[in-house]
Image (cartoon, rainbow, N blue to C red; front, side, top):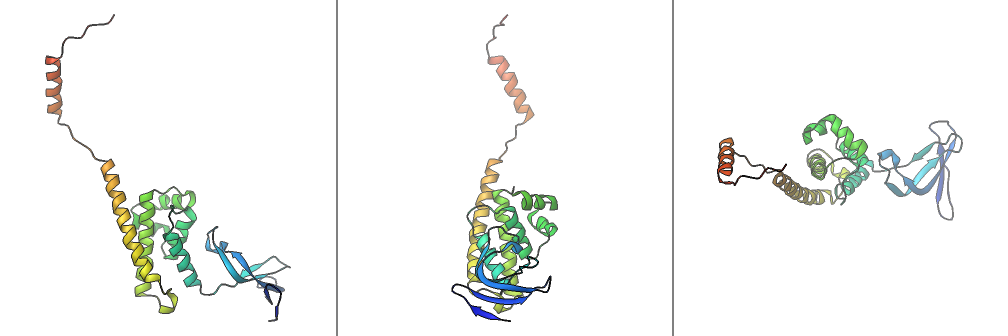
Length: 207
């Protein structure tokens, strides 16, 4: 591998995996479309580009930590999750669409609609975040090696869980209040009707 330092960028060459020609690697900002997200840009990473076949290969180190950081950013955003963000979180925690649907209490087709059309409600948005964050925290505490865990992940995750759980409870209380029903006994209706007919004066007929 050859290396030379330019005025602004470090340039290196490597063999292209697709066509076998040399690729040039430059330090640049890279739109991380491989994540499935259109809004993620990685700053100052080495990106190899092949001028022969058009191949592009970013050099991404610490992918586990990177995806954990992206997930934490999505979980803490103020606005509702977009479809591609729901899909990223679902895949990040290792859930299939069917599994997430069961966790939320809905169908796979509804999850697919959320991911493709961004039509989830505020309550479901918070529920999805809680499910994914809880799974991330469980994996972090039970299965991952310390090197895979960002230093401040556990503390932030616990704070977010408490905050989102409180928000979800408030949303459900508000929703249940809107759905309050009352019952009327048919016998009571009969008494009201008969009483009204007895006490009300006779109305004139309009020709």
